[in-house]
Length: 385
Image 1 (cartoon, helix red, strand yellow):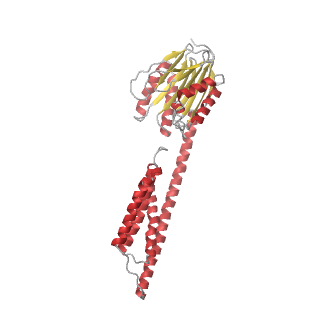
Image 2 (image 1 turned 180 degrees about the vertical axis):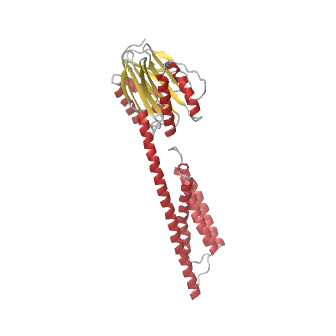
Image 3 (image 1 turned 135 degrees about the vertical axis):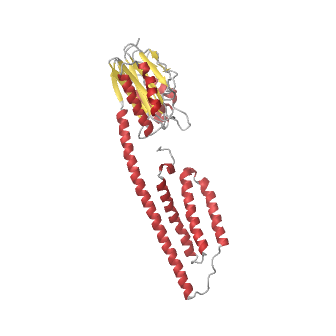
């Protein structure tokens, strides 16, 4: 279930049917009330049809309003016009019985019986409608709290899998965070160290919600297992691609970027991911580092290229997801790479943690994020070969 799905798709069919039955009986009482107003002079056929028409159209209003939501008026006014037309047609074709000037004892008994029937029917309809709505409230309440508990557990698992990063290794400082747009995100940041060096990587699973979060967990597990082996970092993307292909949905893919230090040089690669931003302390400009690879999980036996980059002391690298770049303002303008570069340049003399907060503050000021936001800063304190 997605949070963006219409209400009628997220609620069980049985619950929908029972709620609509409740709507029918609650509003069907109007038909019985009309008969009381007419002092029981409606023909039995018109009496029954009015109850069915009023209750049935109430159901139509509920269904169209739920489906169309903010555009409910598109259906309301045409449907209302049809309902009024039908009610007037019933009044023309099936007219009320004449009002007697004087009523005999049998006629008074008949009227009393008819009004008693209307009263009992009103009580019955209200009771049935009330029971339906109580049932739906209890059932949906239990379902909500169950889903809420599951989401809270998933959010906790996400927090464990993607903790904030603040560490250092081999004259490099690392600082990163991942902010999901919902309870569970599909972004991943990680720094892995071994005796050969380190790798800082970031991934973004397509989609939103729990399913991408599960794939994200599989990506981290597969990446950690691959990096724990003796194979070179350059084989990481090929390995992850092979692992993901048979275990994901066809429409799911993963963008990926990494920066790795092997003790001699700084290597990088990107797979369908936004470029890595490189702030050069000497010239105070920001360049983009990227490879023309497709995202992971799209095709089998897919080759991936990588490269190397030099860094000087106090140079700064930023790996980020498109959730940061796609923040839009009221004019539908994206924050974009230009916005991130401007913040990096303005705060380059600050520690990585302060720059990270500055970028997030700038995006929050620019507009509202619609996707997960993840940033991973790597600052160099030595010159690479």
